[in-house]
Length: 613
Ligand code: AGP
Image (cartoon, rainbow, N blue to C red; front, side, top):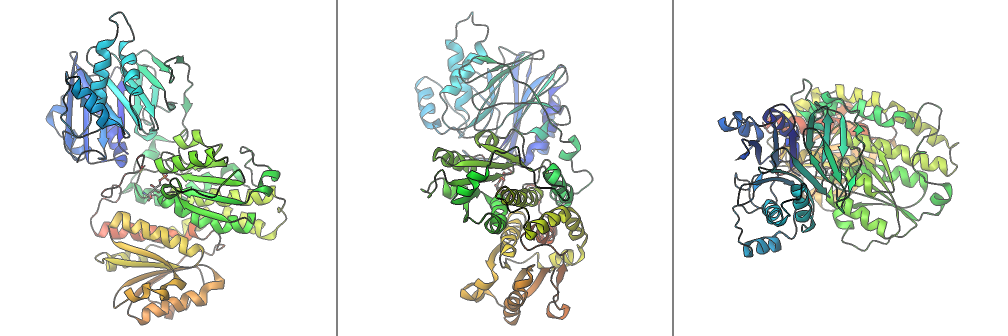
């Protein structure tokens, strides 16, 4: 949940490292630090607060080294402070380490090192790593020409938990050693420059030739070479991936915030995600995943496992899978699934959704399911991310890098790709002539233009945000897929505007929550299913009678006189409607947060990818 950047080359490291940290701040932003090597000494500067504050420190500005590592932190062990910030040094200040992940056995290792005469300054789990490296370095044979890499490997073998690390050593000032397990790390190359990052967007403006490290990999970087080692410390060959993301995709591109930019990128993200999977009059194409008619005819259930917004995308597509594949679909929260004993076996198909592909709970759930004999499909937005290496098959959304902590374009892209997958399954099962299937395919192809229209209608939303931004509680209600969208709208509002909100199935209100409705409470209703209009309108009238003010998002023919605030969205099949109905509600949470003067892209306490439990 933190961000790592590293650089070795012929230019000054400082501007490249600071620039990279700014691109990674969405991964963590409570403290930051940088270390370079100058005159064979490590110079390390750390600070509580944002990268901007680190950048403004005079000493940082005068850093001149051409090799360095840097880090932006989201605290796990030890509160945000300059002492707990990374890089961490060993007692002799010979080694500097930045680390993402959690060292689960750090107390044990601290005890071992304390007994061996080491002491600790910080409360972090990370500080054991530079000291362990020092411990093993001293034990290496003087003649060993690969002392640093060997010492780092020995240290990592002692670590339990997850790590991505970059290591500097003042005794070998021409090298950086990196290693990873269960936490992402990539190396970018061009000519004599080498870049390290925990996330591709941090280095995309310098290169799109990227080596993706696998679990257990270690690499030694100099200006002239990279040597890769596997878990057994055998030298291996790796081929870089050419990443097609445009460097501009990781910039705000004129928008005030990444979130707003990403909201407006949704038509493109959906179009790119549909890509070659579907064109007019054709069958869906998922021939890259090996799912046969025989297998599909025999499955007894589908589990969709994910966290947060990705889990809401799962709830949004449950009905389309159940309708088209005719098996029960269970949508489960990854952190719950992994500690239960779910009733799954080789007849259960598992679909795990993760934008980042690095969410620890989702990866663990997938591994558990695989161990129980299930076939697993990962839906991810990040090429080569951890989950894609664990799953039997991976299907990518092509939303481009999502930087804002609040997920928007990933959500609509996930629903799009999963709806296509449900249709594909139906086609594999022999239902291709089904009229509803043809309608759904046509509607999916129209989603980008419908989302574009929904994005134009912002006046009512902006005005409503001004009215409600000081409120403490809000309610979102809907039925069927509108309820799925309501859950996501409620999460968006909570995470970026810090207003408490709940989402309910409209019909459930009268079984309790309606007791909370009193004068001036805000209730947002979503109505996109023709069959349920009357019932949903009645539910909203029930809250108006009790004093609530309402905002209604609808594509149905609802009388203007019934509600003061109606946001009209384009007609869309109810099974696909969250892709369109969520748009004004993403904007509502955005404008409410702006009215409150909050940092929309970096909400408090959150980080973009949750790589810890
Ligand atoms: C979304 O706005 C959230 N920040 C969060 O719920 C997120 O969707 C969740 O942590 C899952 O992330 P993933 O898709 O990268 O696995």
